[in-house]
Length: 144
Image (cartoon, rainbow, N blue to C red; front, top):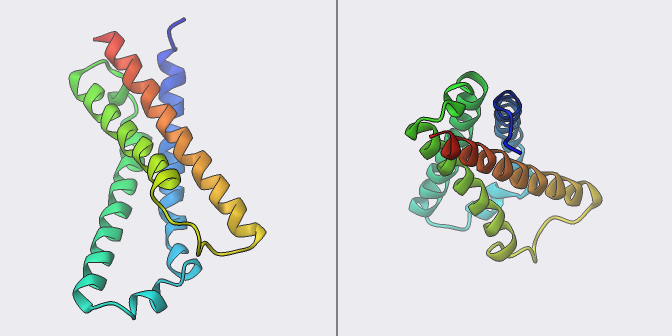
């Protein structure tokens, strides 16, 4: 059974909303993880590079969100560009899930039920985003 284009478009719009929500929530991460204190221990160049990378990730997530909320039709039109963009976004989120489980050292992760709940919600979000854009990639690939 082939997925319905309207359903995929709605999923992409929801994914866009979720990504913009993630961007808004990202402003709390520095406080929760104590970035100010940790970054005080490193050289200025390392600190500048860290903030630059963090800003790039934030802007990429925002752009994925805005693109998905406002151009969801273009992301399901079967074009080569739709295939490439959905494939890229899916790979981005799948990579983020893999990094979460196989790279991050969680030994100093903040304790508490709220922090554990937040981590579960984030991981479920990353998996959901991977699935939505993977499905959109598949849908476009088979339309082409």
